[in-house]
Length: 121
Length: 280
Image (cartoon, each protein chain N blue to C red):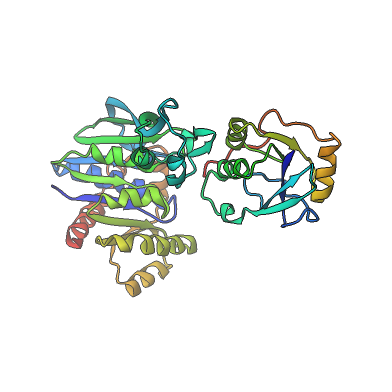
């Protein structure tokens, strides 16, 4: 399964980034092969608006089936739903490796509604 | 067409509305046709003083895309062209109308005409009269971020045969610029405080590139002369200094015009009008 972890740095050793839309990195991990590849999301941090929407498009293009993150706003949630991507929720910052292990061990709840307020601009 | 005057400011609460409503009232007393256009659409308040009777109310909307998914070829050009991330390509185009600025780019780039534009209401507009003064007010709906389309709609109602007074939103961002662009002359109302001066400098830097005549009104003027010194250095004329008077604040707080209780203020606005005419 292909999982995207929102991270504060380019490897899974770094702490995860709890924000989805303006996460610094998306790390695509393949749970079968154990490979991980970083996607730099920093250009999107400067988006005036719609960062969550853009990030949803990015992770969809990366081929993610699941996103492991801490908070998803209403528009990003709607976009991820449309792409058929599930959201696994981490509530506190931990290393990416730890978040991935907990996901694989089925310890992370699946988010079934947005858990963050929308932003206007 | 008679003069269009924007009454703007950097800092909020400096007296834009005070200047605008009294200028309107003075011009009306002189028998001049005048149209007051409240472009401070996030917090319109000119009506509290001029008390118009509304005759027309209208909705203001922007065009947002609606995608015909049967016709759509999933090419993704609409999502790629959108600067505002209002369309995401997720298997099919997904529209976020609340992010759309109504530019129409997606409709233009769609190679198969799968996008049509549908109106989305973002505000309202009311027109009426306050005695001899024509009055139009825009009001952006709560929670909506885009003031300029409502401001442009208000300005489109401008009566062609009247002097137009545009009560601008505070600040130096898009709503203030959208208002000032429609004017022949820009008046900046400020106050003699460090905040007033700081925000005046920002406003001057923002409005100067519009290349329209600019003048400053110092409201609640006192012994602090830094605004006047700054304006002298920047080559911007001071059109009026309105004194700080407790009585003015009392009348203002009751939504009353000043002329009946404070006749000297009528002369101040007569002089201000002469200064504005000399600006162009």
